[in-house]
Length: 404
Image (cartoon, rainbow, N blue to C red; front, side, top):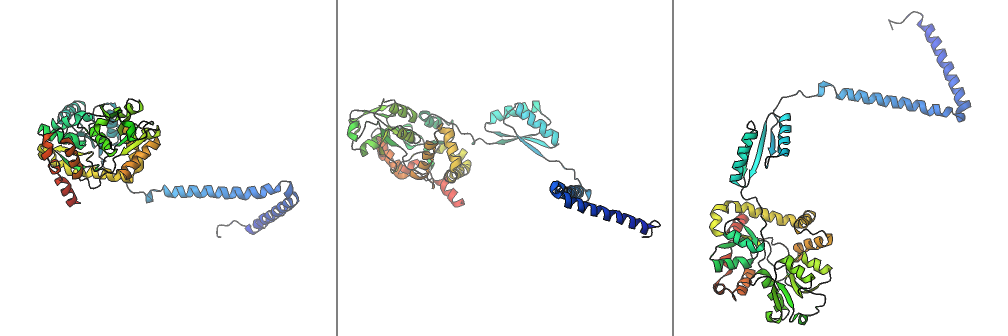
């Protein structure tokens, strides 16, 4: 008030008069020209005022947030960077270069499956990047190798592999004929997943007499399931022509190629055959049968035994994941079976979840092994005195259950 100019009341009166006249004119114009376009001014001016206020408020808030008062002080630190490397290539080189650009603490990590290859890689690393530390993590039991069924047991006996997922026939034969010490540590399936399918023209067991039934070599899993199915149908092996052709894909091709009147099939071939109109003659789903299980050589347990609890735990977790994560399980089925028909994949998943589910206890079936021993006794004399217990070692499962 003390800083006001002289004669301010007169100036205030003049300015107030001007404002009053302007207001009167504005009201008159709006009243007389409202419907002719003045209403636009009534809406536009307040809208612009509100918009400008909002913009001003935004900048005021941004200014407040950018103030250094609320910002923590910088603390210099070294963020370590771990780079997984599997070999020497351009991807690894670019990853290392980027890591070095954002951190002074960089370390490469290499998971080694083979000691000799790891040593070679370490020498390559020292020649390429001697200034960067390389940590090698030995993991000799993480590699999964796919071997043809006919060669799988031989590979285990020769110690080319440490563990094998396989059915009972070849294991029993190797022990009794070849004096091996192979045992089941755990089981994934305790029932047969096979069924005998016939041509659309086969309406009864009698229609199979004298016809070719696809199978594999005598004493194999396929030979066993064919003979069991024939027995359930009231037929003798001599009633048909059992033809040793090969594995699952071979007998399936023989069936659809009309080279055989019948063939034993398991999923996904089961559902492929059904979709093409082939007839289910007899399934063996309820029969106790030692199907795929974890087999090792007892003489190697001193070396690989410490890894077995973790290995068996991972299998049990895999069974739980299969049952609880159908989307993931179906993707895995598609990846390894190469099946693209989603209906077949869904039926295959349902089959191994409900019809012939994975064995949650993971304990081998002694009844199933006994049935296979009895079957092989016709060609292997030592099988007549063999017992299922000599092919099983559940000590690691017992330890696992105690830990659980």
